Image (cartoon, rainbow, N blue to C red; front, top):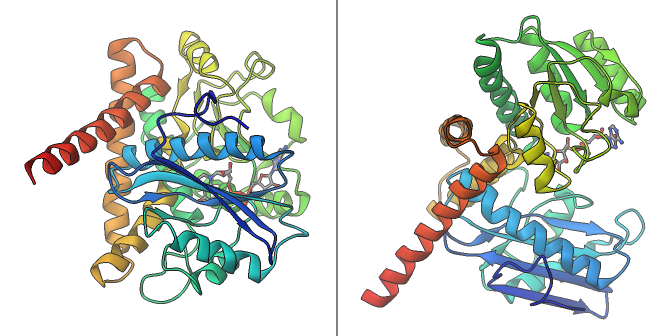
Length: 363
Ligand code: NAD
């Protein structure tokens, strides 16, 4: 297994492997950056084919969290953790308690939360052993399910795109192709329909599809057909890498605004979208509402206060200003939006690093 020569290694501050014999826990925590504050990012439980695969994933995901937290202007760095195993068959409360004990050894450098394969209940189990987890339900600090706030951010990002491309303040007359009507996609569908959009939806879960269609009047299409429908906006809210060489020519929407992480299969796809005049709203800007919600819990913990919806609202608002800045700079500098978002995130991370360094020297 390689680390420092891995293509996904990006000057990570720390990479920690944990094994617990009794529970079978095999976990890797990657702390990409603590320049802006403690590293925060979810824990993914996945049946990786090898530990090399798990390492690649956690390196890539933790770097992504540094960028997402920086563009959301949160006082948090980026980190992520992975647990190797099948979340349907190998989960036990003891496993997550062992994970919690492992986090204690990092002393608060990294805070974990839910991600693919890890639920609020699992994190609550880890919480019995460690304070270094967030995304809990209940209590005055608990931020609960982040999906409604994520959906609100995606919705407002869609309005930003509509204002730029169609000079309108709502979505009347626009068709949105929505892929995935799960936690985020379900809330998003309601908001889009209320703002006047016509919806074309797909999912592999037919029950969820029918429920959303009954509420919103959406047209249902088969999963693969979503790339071929006539729509103004494509909203990927299911899987990553759906913008790829195979789908690029099929998608005719003028804007892509969705919740899914890592929508671009490669950076070149982002460049190609830009060349074709498609407004790509960078995924980690659009979907930052969820981590903002979690950050409110961190903040409540630090200050002894409560989860604060007004603070969350202010941060989501600022995130939308950052999206506007990304789109304006993309036009002015004639560069793809994902590059501009990366540049903004890197500038914020580097500024925080320099400030810390100056403080260290002055002390
Ligand atoms: P979810 O699992 O609740 O919903 C995903 C939906 O996609 C499910 O209904 C699933 O059946 C459907 N799906 C799976 N494969 C599909 C396919 N091939 N075609 C069509 N639909 C398919 O997840 P979620 O929490 O709603 O998150 C959606 C996306 O947004 C994910 O990529 C997630 O990483 C990202 N995201 C979520 C949040 C959040 O707050 N939940 C925050 C940031 C990013």
